[in-house]
Amino acid sequence: RAIRGVEVWTRKLSAAPHRTADYLRLVHMPKEEEVATSFRERMLFPLAGMTGGANGAFWVSNLTLHNPTREPLFVTLRFATAQSRTDRRLRLSPRQTMVFPGVVKSLFNTTGLGTLWIDYRANHAPVALLDTNDVAHGGRSSIQKPLTVRDAATFGGDAPELTIVGIPAAAGRRVSIGVVNTGIAPAMFKVSADGGKAFEVEAPEDDLRLVTEPEKRLGVAITPATTLRIAPKSGTGVAFATVVDADGGTQFIAAVPSQK
Image 1 (cartoon, one colour):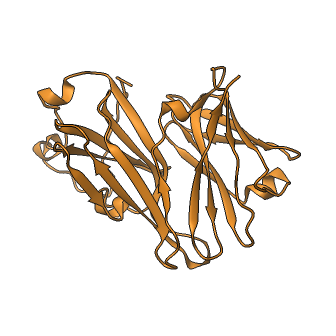
Image 2: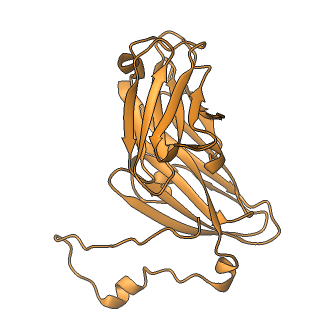
């Protein structure tokens, strides 16, 4: 999107004020090559983090970026949680690959669970991969490819519903369902499964909502033959499921848009 809106920064009451020049240094004025076109596109990794989990797990996400072109790429990365937004700007030289182990801490100097957004010039997308694993138990990593607006469902649009299929039914596995609002207004999603009860999830703009133990809320067991449906009742967004095995291995399953 070409317009992202306005952010208002306020100083914490407990923090000492700085000189005006110190604040002005935080303002990024784009160079000419960064504004060659005003049209921007975004990709996202719905689930990224550095955070503890159930049964002593500790989840860490690692990011790989690659510039496949013969010209520099300028990208803006945003780690968004329910409490905060943190932005970083990067320049990737032609054919350069950058790796950020523990990206939430190493690049954004924070911890927690949230969504990683990557903003780039239209038709100049970097190659991006995110792997997340339980470092406490040495579990198998899940490899995420980024999602875009083409993976989203929109209320009243050509793709009004998302579906998730193929969730394994191994003993001891834990399933979670997540939605991310990719629109510019709050969104409401209806989650349902064949033979089960439906429930709703609300997500503000750019926000992630993760539902743990969805089988309890649906009232049915999720098997490989179960079709999960996520339909926006308002707004637009993407959805996914995560599966954590008993041995600490993890799997990320992106929802697929369904046509009318």
